[in-house]
Length: 86
Ligand SMILES: [Zn+2]
Image 1 (spheres, rainbow, N blue to C red):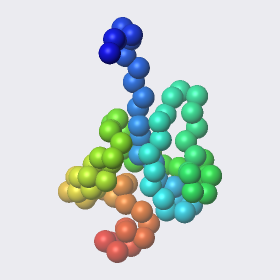
Image 2: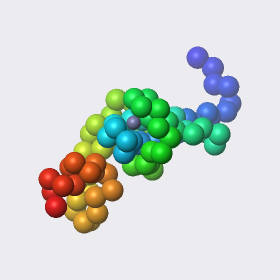
Image 3: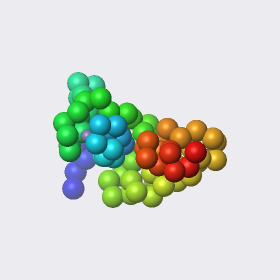
Image 4: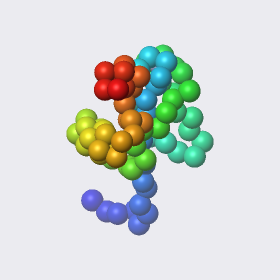
């Protein structure tokens, strides 16, 4: 396989849709507006800012939540989960 001499990065971000409480990953380019695949809402929250490999997100979310909980903020948690914790 030959390299094209140019690295194309496709950052994948984790989003949370507050409308239907769905977490999803989305490839984001500058012109992309992330929309919930379940309900189509574009009013979604970005959860994890670091690019991540597909298929590993569950573990990453888990560790991100663990870290968030340790730091005392709950931005990675949904409303339902917050009410259970607080
Ligand atoms: Zn949604």
